[in-house]
View 1 (tube, rainbow, N blue to C red):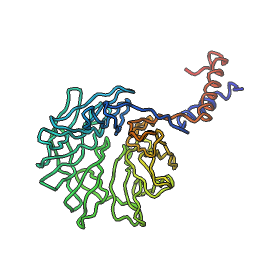
View 2 (cartoon, helix red, strand yellow; view 1 turned 90 degrees about the vertical axis):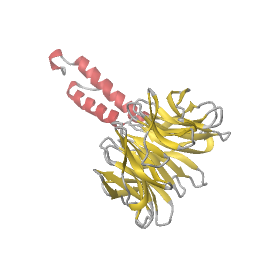
View 3 (spheres, rainbow, N blue to C red; view 1 turned 180 degrees about the vertical axis):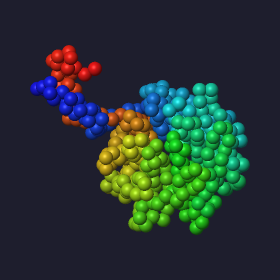
Length: 359
């Protein structure tokens, strides 16, 4: 029974519990497709809009926008055969690539008015891999045949972000402070994780003993997800934060790969099981959680928003790949405690004299 003198304690308990409710499990939902079978979800924004690529009835992959279960819009191309949607910001601006009539894969943005081709750095092709809420896109663009550099697209112009001394670089992520991450060849031709900040490129350390690394995404707090090898040669998902690198581990196998993170520091990707197959995971609070499949052997997670909804694809029992989202289910005990504390607070307010009630 809650007494009047403890109602503020009850309220504080409810606030702490409500803020700390964690998912002990996830409900997996099949999103649908463009009626061609295969579909893969790549990213989700704060409003729950999802983008990715799926096969059309003509068996070619097109970028899609999904606004709800079974609600798919074909984003089309630049007159060519294929396209992919790779990222979406809070305003619904979508980044990716699309083929033109000549078959060249060009960097593009999609908005409510359709598809818009972005300039390259002089070469024939490029890809916009990520986009911030400010509308700044990053990716890679060819400067000449066979050579590509990390690229920033801002106000309709393309900017060469440079390299760590080698010939190649690529930008995979950008946050809302214009911190950009990706990878670049160094002077010895080794691929290394890179951070572009205020016009300069910086090397990010991988795991101890690593001979290669790549930064795959960054959140607004400056946390960076990495791909890095270990001293034994295995590829691992890792988290870089303020110069410290943490190996996120596996699901019992050897390898893991990270593809997305949110502003709470939750990381998603796929990790190997002891049998050698791989499953989607979310890394939350130091724990790697297996998200499972649709009855098949494989799955992978690519994006997560700040509400904890995860998107990717999973294999069903027939072997078909389906675009899916995993929706967090609150842990029953924690949710029950939070609701009980809230009920006690409400009851104490009702019993309190009018002059003693909070305004």
